Length: 403
Image: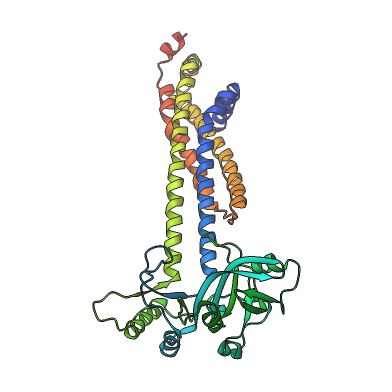
């Protein structure tokens, strides 16, 4: 009986192929939009998480002032850190891998006839550890170079490409302001971050060189702290806050004039935001599934009206109400499932194209595909039941009189 119902449903669909296509269009768009939005959203979340992970393992950063937004803008009137603050953290903090001082400016770098404006960062070898950033070529700074403030530098891939083209940069000299700086290393390529910044557009120099010959002060703008594996970053954060309050002589009850950010908290906030937006976009797209279901119910009601005499004949020659109900219900479900299958293919295709264009990973989730398919079947059952019941409860005599 069920096979016969499917056969009759397919025949009815073929008789009105164009109308059937228009009927399932709402389901196609709804399922496709849901799958595309959720897949793109999960790809975005994966990219944000991966990019933030590149900023360092178990990373915290300390800055003067009070954070106002995002990763942190600070009030400029707060007293800057110095090398003694860095030394105190290194001497009194436990459970940390590395602590790196950082100060930076945007400067024009010059090599021969080429010049490029980039971010010049003063730091030391601990920076490579806190950022989990290795070298593609060359070497890190020697201790003697850090102590003496020698003019040596490590450059990013973007700087290499813009200044040197196809030349080997190692051993070459570039100019930063009036400082002639020898290139001793090339950083591994990282690409663009989720915040739209080019991570490879950077030059690292010893922090004493930066302070004495470029900045003209002893300020440290940021201190990066990388906790050891297995150590709770919340404990390290509490220790940093306690120690910095002591050093900056902040009385109990007074507000801190510095702030500490845990990258795990930033990751959780960012992924939570992208997940929320993904759910919101998916919910909006799901509305079109509801609209598609109404379209199926409308067309099935029309179909019942058009086929009243056919239904009357079937009932008159002995067909049961249940058989008529199943026939029209199966027809609605077949339409809905066909729309669901086409929608799944459309959604995955759109998501793959968008992922490539947006340069985010394509995250295939079999669960959302299964849910979308089952939901399309549910739409067929729910919105097809009313027309099917109406057909099954027809009076055969009245149906046969219908013109």
